Image (cartoon, rainbow, N blue to C red):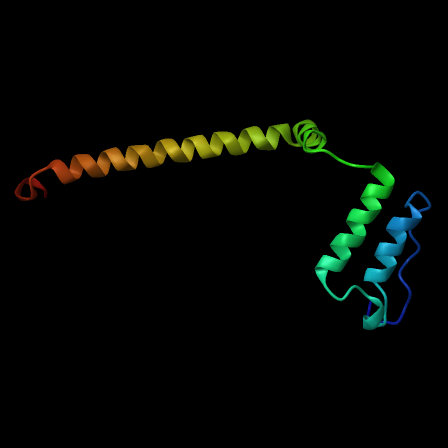
Amino acid sequence: MLMSRMPPAPLPAWVPGQVAKVIHTSLAHDPRRRYQAAVEMQQALEAVISQLAGVISDADIAHYLNDHLAERIAGRRKAIQLALELLENEIVLAQAISSIPSGSRS
């Protein structure tokens, strides 16, 4: 799209103007009009978020994550627990093997 010199497709009407400005800046054909670094775009997005949503607390983020990612978080916790149990079993097995006199191992 950037190389075609064609303007990007119009954004849906529900996209706030501040968000549209960030999107259009990031898709500008002229590289000098785009964000020059990812941190510039990050700052622009953070400014838009604070304008549209106000200050977001850690508790707000935790609540959102819990509401939207609870199953995924539980699955990852379970996977981590299983990995730790397997590691513990490997350690116990390695210690048991190392305690066998070297002449008895075969």
